[in-house]
Image (tube, rainbow, N blue to C red):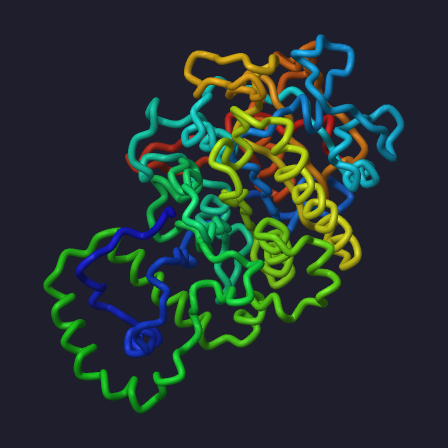
Length: 479
């Protein structure tokens, strides 16, 4: 999990609210990452009326299918291709004439009028943990092969918070990410992924990360409520110890990690004392029938939680697909083996269910016109079943290897023209044949819909002005 680095000191200028939080002690928050509002200058263009796509979105939900969904089995089927290319799945009609998607997305097929399917996304990185950087930031990884997280280009949420774009003054985190942990200890490669944090903007802007599985009865977002045995008397008894800690802190060097930890405590204390903020994380408030529509599995309930947070005022939520631990052959959407079995039985049904329920739920609440939804992975899969590529991890006879030269991303909601297909792949879904789209273009489209000029300049860690985004908004999908 991306987190604020541990440190042995606290800022000397701790506020009283922060002191109260420290006195509470033992609140189980050290595993969570709470960014804080900084005194950033708003450099983005103001919102314009919703008749335009620019600035129409007040929030964004990013559904990240970590592992690389096969474009040929999801959004870009090739029924006329040779068997080794087209695979086992067949396309079905949608409620948009001429738009066909996979037979294993039946719910989404009836909601295609809300979707913009981009079939020509491409880049060059076939490594999971660095390719994520492309889709979460719009930029290639700064250092080939990885490097430290603090060198990453900042995630969309960190940029929005740095610019104070939404001018928020809420105790809720400015952006949240879900990375549910499998109960059986399945590997969590997703937490090693680049681009999910604030990068060179500094650790104080790292996301609030939730590891708990929201489908479990004991889901409690890290137990960040006050323990029953920590009352005012006990907190007051710790005043002397706190003063000692503060005196020690005055002699220690102030670092970004210390500032980030202090901000972490400040945000946590604000959450602990705000009933409405706590309720945003309480899925028990939802109608059980609605929870069932999302699916009583980790992904479905994380997507429902994302809707609750957006409705409560959180501007950006990322939901990473979890490793459910059902099979040790193909994990996440990384189907080197069992491609058709796992897509049909384990991956596509819950994705179809949760995405469809989210669209319906947002629309019913009047939120779809002001919420941008993005469905993507970090890349796609090889054109041929059983084909291995240089830099990939190989493919079994029933699997597909990594492929970044062409894959699909789907947009919906605020600022997006539904019922559209942008770009096209060649006859093997191997390379774009029309209107190629880069991750930078997707980033520019996201920023555009959220009301941020992609040409906005940031100041990097070396004090140099850098353009926020090198791509252009995708006009073909904009309302």
